[in-house]
Image 1: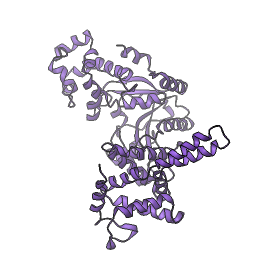
Image 2: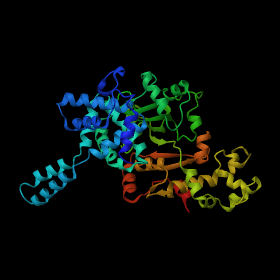
Image 3: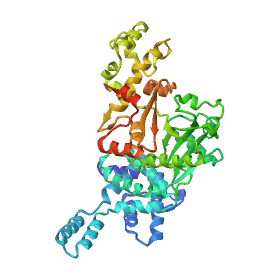
Image 4: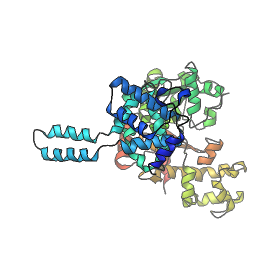
Length: 459
């Protein structure tokens, strides 16, 4: 992408951009030199702190008025024209090398760090200081991630912004809050909007998820008080849950919390695309467990009822794994039902998203054992770059959980059937084993699993 993309994009914006906070009645041409000058003054702090913040606010306003081409051009300018000065870095590095072992080494090191600090960081920091600046930067990074797929020259800017967001969203700055039916309506609407695992279909559905036998917790940043960063929905039950439709049944009676011994985390949703790479999900679960144990001392078991979202994708890429999951006994049961071997049409139809086998009497029950066996092998053995192939498994195993139990036909909704044959998995968080599980996972990639799962997963 040549610089003329920047020029073309900005010229196309001349009739819709309000420059310098001027009213729409006094539009001016947005020219490249003026934009560059504004960024340079922002990076250098020209005119003092107040002027710099006002300038940053105008730049942010300009950015928000741009279409995708204009935003891409804006970000390319920051990425390519406001990095460290190579000559200054080289000179500072040469001085540092000469000063190693002398009393001036540490001063030289500080000057080298200063030379390597790019003006991009200064511009981003000025955006952070304006009202709603934190949310602006989070949304700006969401744009950046989209553009990055086709424009690798934005990578340096993305790395710097991700580093700043990791610092600004350190878990020590975040607030854990319980969300209830009495929470502000604007916040409840965010839950409906951001729910990523089990769609919230109505206000009645949402109210059911916030009833007395349910809990919902979220992390918030103090500068984004009505924007949950990540939230978890919890059901208080008397055993491991094995069916999400039953768990979300609006007509089911409200359970007695005094009899609950298990907390089921059935939905965890990250809400801000721009915070990809900023990890706080593990801290959320640990804080929620502590909160639940304090409020409900009768809880003894903490587990999930989780989807297996990539199972079918993996099987399509490894069709031999599906056939290998069937034993001779399975084939004997399936032959009268139209599945006479891996080459049969009935067998091939197992991977259809429409799941035609679901309606055939007797077939779902006959498929239970081999497909559950397949899922166990997938969770315990399928890897990508040394980590579990399944993203939900990566999250929970990396947080110290173990694969506890697989549940056949636990999600009979269209999404569950198309992703994982309707199977769901319980990940168990055993407070006494979490730390050792994490250490083994990080050191050796070891996957903690119950005895029953290990038996099913044997190849």
